[in-house]
Amino acid sequence: MSSFFIQDRQVVNNSFTAQKINEPAFDTIFLILVVLLSGMGVTALFSSSYHFAEAVFGSPFHFMSKQLIWLILGSFSALAASRISLELLKKYIPQIMFISIGINLLLYLPGLGIEAGGARRWLEIGGVSFQPSELIRLSLVLYVAKMLEKNMDRMKDFSKAVVPQMLIIFISTLVVYSQNDFSSAALIFAVAFLMLIIGGISPLFVLLLGASGSLGAYVMLKAKPYRIRRILSWLNPESDPSGAGYQVLTARNALQSGGFWGEGLGQSSMKMGSLPQAHSDFVFAVIGEEAGFIGVFVIFLLFGLLAWRGFLIAMNAATLFEKYMAFGLTTAVYLQALTNMSVVCGFVPATGIPLPLFSAGGSTSLITMIIFGLLLNISRRNKLPGGAVR
Image (cartoon, helix red, strand yellow):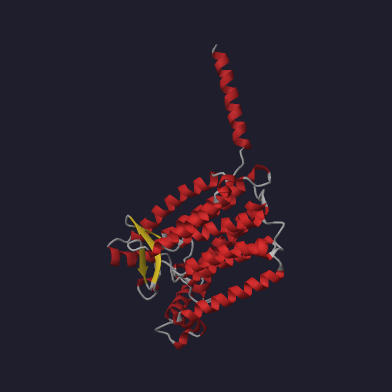
């Protein structure tokens, strides 16, 4: 009798082992990169924020503890996103898009929308604030991916395939822009536009849409004089060193003072007050000062590797919907990171775009982790054996 139970247990164990071996795996390299960037991000945020946090909030851990809470919540959300049925998700994308736009419109209800710095971008419910434009950053990628797959044979038909998509893209862009957030609106439009190009729209349509987008951006810039001043100060920051050019010059000084090896972790002097928003939009400048060129290079490299793995996931995806979604999600994160780092390095004008996983901001961290979860989900379902990406 005992030998029977032993044999039976061996059969069960062997079946379980075989099932685990055959179960598709996540892209391990992508997951490692996410963990590395998350850990480095928390460390950099604490180093850049502890002085300001202690002076204003009475605790040096104020920003770091909030970031950790959002990252933990984001990790559970990423786990759920990595296991959700993508067929089920695709079915409800129009509703998700509609709800995302609706939540953004709640900003204009009294008592819900919070205005700060001349912009109404945050919802506050139960003492917790959230930036709803982040929902559009995610949901618009899903919507465009679904529409590209649906209209794959009609992408040369402007009225039937391109116009319906552009209508939602323009509405989403305007909803975000109405929050006095030109930079996020431009970034959302750019990601969707790149997805349409990948989806195979006619070159003539690309020129028309590009011209329309450029004209719209010009009108939006002219609508607010300070945006023009920001561009002029970027071109010649020395002309107004204590005004519009101050952030550009201070960020540049922080990077230059770091040299090759940096001043050492926690040794930044710029974060003590001379560098505005050192814990949010300009955390990368603190990294440059404390970790030097080598630290800046490592962050650039890690985000570049993350994009490389994300685009590989897109190339090896099993369906067109997953290909377009993986491309859009990867582009959304990488373009945001590249924009922030380019601002700090002085390559583009200041935008107010945070550095994913590094800048203080729970909304960005949460949505970014969900994006990573969806990419891991696609990598687990790809057309290569075992979910591996080559």
